[in-house]
Length: 137
Image 1 (cartoon, rainbow, N blue to C red):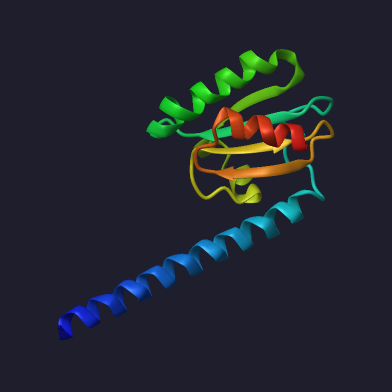
Image 2 (cartoon, rainbow, N blue to C red; image 1 turned 90 degrees about the vertical axis):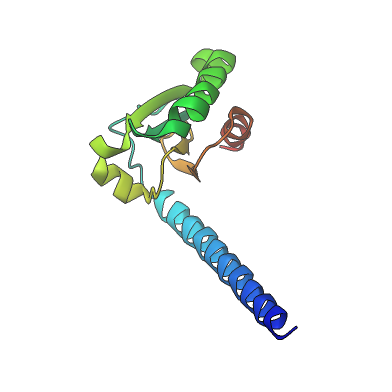
């Protein structure tokens, strides 16, 4: 029984640590997004005038090619010329990755028609999620 109490205590500690990390990441992402909304870091990549999605991937990223790329293709087919979708290689744009606060690939950045960052998705974002974010922009 004594070992069981230790295991429960360790499990509770792990859950608390994971929750704290998740909360810190969420707060950091909100802070980063607020700072980006006063800048237009992707003006050299996407011209203003239409909402846009800029997707960051890497050649070694399996999820980028098997999940994110098909989601972007479905979104492009559905929204056609109402949105600009651009893909960039994260390793080829390290300064932009750093400036945006991208920690992992795939990552997607949703811009409004003025080129202002409205959403930053770290990890896979479905076409439904991106469509919703574009509507909010």
